[in-house]
Length: 336
Image 1 (cartoon, rainbow, N blue to C red):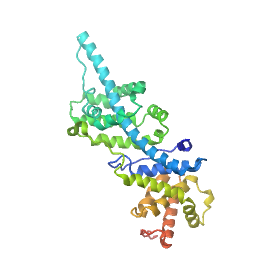
Image 2: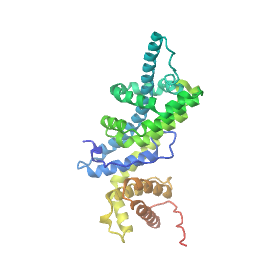
Image 3: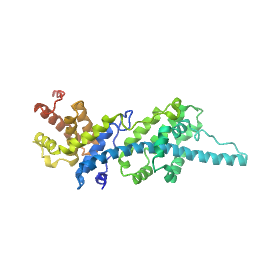
Image 4: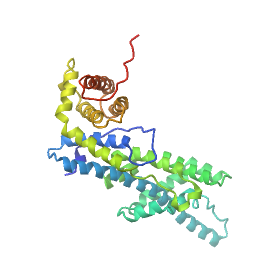
């Protein structure tokens, strides 16, 4: 049974700081929130299976990254087909030849020739050839867009203009595309939750492309090194294996609250945050608290973020005083 069957419909996460790797700790934290929630909803709790599910889920996000880059290539290929047909017709009828500006877009051509993308997609069974109608519809939407019309009317034939065109088209027609989202969800139940954060990585990649790199332009690597993969494993395992102890810390620190009435997602988020505080000595306490407060704003109730912020601060101070958490705490701001 796939654990994600039990995931709630998570809302959009606005990720502003995208690093030069695909799977960073921000994405890992998101996945662990999802998988921990799912773990407790699943009647068959097997930690080894759940850990494999976590790593597989992260790998599927990396697959989606390539698949969305390949969509740009698919639309460009469709454009060339139309250009070839229109050119042949113009020659037959003695009409002016159509412009090849979009069909020969320099950025899209470079992306199509990218060695890493080609190598990755050659190993995948899924390609955009399986969804020709969607590709054609997206091509049609491109043709009708003001972004495309302005581009075709412009005298700017630079690589930068070609790259900027696809950045704008992606933001406008790919990021906000319900039909595309539906197709991706049918292909993988992971991708429905992944797309909005992966979109940010695609945009980052478009921006990083440079013409002098040619087909050897580097895409974002999956991990920076094994450290982040270990971070994912250790954080998830600590969260699950020490759940009773972490929840005792929550209960002890929330004596003025009815702990049983907490939103279930609040408990999950705080449990993971405590695991991170206690498992990773090099991550400052305030960084951990801020990360999970931000997740609470998206995944839990409207009041959760403020409550979790106060609770995690109190729990951390309690653990420091007890000699359990060996990290310095920032001073509380003085009340005016």
